[in-house]
Amino acid sequence: MRSRRRAAPLFALALLTIIGTGPAEASPTGPSGPAGPAGPSAPDGHCDRQHRLDVPGAEHQEAACLPDLTTAALAGTRYTDTADQAGLAAAGTVGPSGVPGIQIDGYFPDSSRMNATHGWRHDAQFVIRLPDDWNGGLIVTGAPGTRKQYATDALIGDHVLAQGFAYAATDKGNSGPDFYTDGRRPGDAIAEWNRRTTELTRAARRAVGQRYGHGPRRTYMTGISNGGYLTRWQLENRPGLYDGGVDWEGTLWTAEGPNLLTSLPTAVAHGTGEASDADMAEAGFAPDSAFLWPYHQKAYWGVTQKTYRAELDPSYDPRCPGASTGSTLEEILAPCASDARYDYDSRPASVHRAVERIALTGRIGKPLITLHGDQDALLPIAADSDVYDRMVGERGKDRIHRYYTVEDGTHVDGLYDTYPERLRPILPCYRAALTALTGWVEGGAAPPADRTLHRPTSGDVVNTCSLRD
Image 1 (cartoon, rainbow, N blue to C red):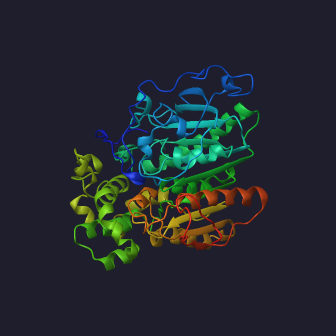
Image 2: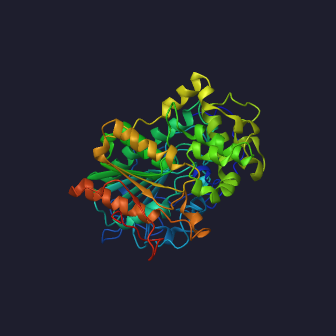
Image 3: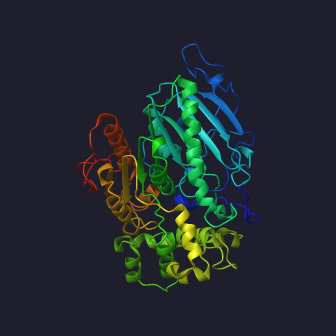
């Protein structure tokens, strides 16, 4: 998609899920060619059929045979970007290693140039990983926030690869705090996220068939935050591509609200003293999450409000179009003065139509498990997943939906390290939900009914969780 305006330079923003990080420059030449660092395919089947791999529709692709596809081995190499994973997981998270196979990096045709990974400066980048020991399944995800294709390598990719799944992730076609400059009309940048996810899913399924001799027996969609939104959207609009999904605190967009443009203005106003704690509660923010609000005021609320408002309502304040208003990190993160007074309900019908283009309906076509922390101070649960669960029920789809509230969970698990007595990582519950989903789809074992997953009083809270507590 073409840029609506010239994007400002991206900064190295390790700002967690919604705003992501700047471009990775560690790999100026990109992955090695077809032989890869491990050489040609070994006689024992390691990287078998690598020469046959040709990702359909890709403008550029590079395959490498690797002794280990997990971040335990790839950290510091050209095959992942740990900076883009900053803050997503708690420090004590245990990850697997020792998964040999093939990695394909590349990009689909696109005219925008926000993603500088591998020195390509080309959007619509993807990564596909094909383990030698394959279980017949494929997991697809899109980057959370405005991060890029390696963002969930440690959070999701390592775990599913160790279970034998093939794994594919996309940068969604645009990235960074100036993502809203992509496209010609309001909503184009976010709409592209959905199209790129569908594009990668279809291409990855074909690549799986080339590697293993047949396509995936099961394909699952999953993701966190904006990746959770993608999961919901794909199961609503492209259910034929998937067998199910796990939605980790997906962003909710509805044309009449709630959405980010109905909750964040109150948060911005609270940060400037123009809104009270009672106003925050009315907007959906849990009062118990107040200890997280000062941090979110500095790192999240301002930049998130102005960039998404610039994407969907660019005429609101032409003097403050979005993140490109700032030239320093502090300026980029700060809200526009006018954002505290933003009133979505009073905005023109054209703004609501822009949101309608990307809106969710709740009409899922395949089994879905949703998780959301009750201390989320960016996407408050009362204005997000609680609402989406009701939407699914109103569409008569509650039979294929499970909804788990994670007590003391917040938007990113990295904050657990700062508040270990007050927060709980969601990742182990996500892993339990993924296991429950595959058992539901493949074995007919229905997951537990909707419930709150209470914080355990003992044990390894960082790495264990039960859906049946």
